Image (cartoon, rainbow, N blue to C red; front, side, top):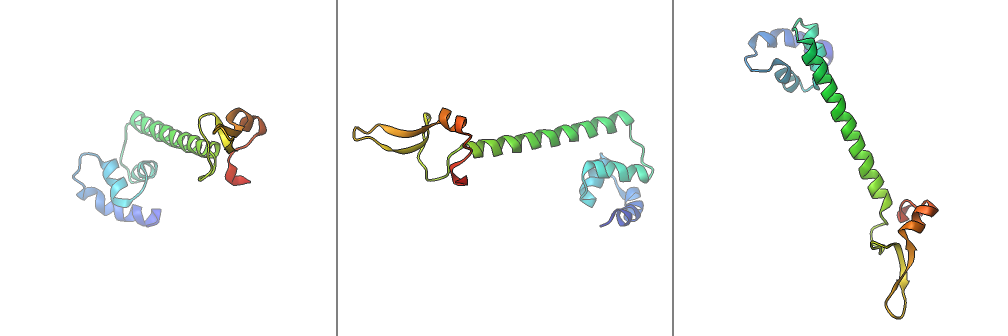
Length: 123
């Protein structure tokens, strides 16, 4: 629904709502986020405590920032790992092979960082 259609439908919905939290009910019923629900309910004349509305907006902004930070951290962790199927361990970023005695050789994590390697699948 568009905002104008929701507002028109909500005029009829508001008197019939019997739940404990009109903001939550509106957001769920019309499938909108809480910011949109606050704006639209205020447009319909529903009064909210300004401190409550501001704390809700702050909470939503903090959640969005935390989610973006978590996504960025996951991307960085994924980029720092070698490509699937490529051998590595806690010391070597890329194991090129093994000596006749069985010792691995290749690029260490420190060398990879110095060289600016992100992921072997980019090559």
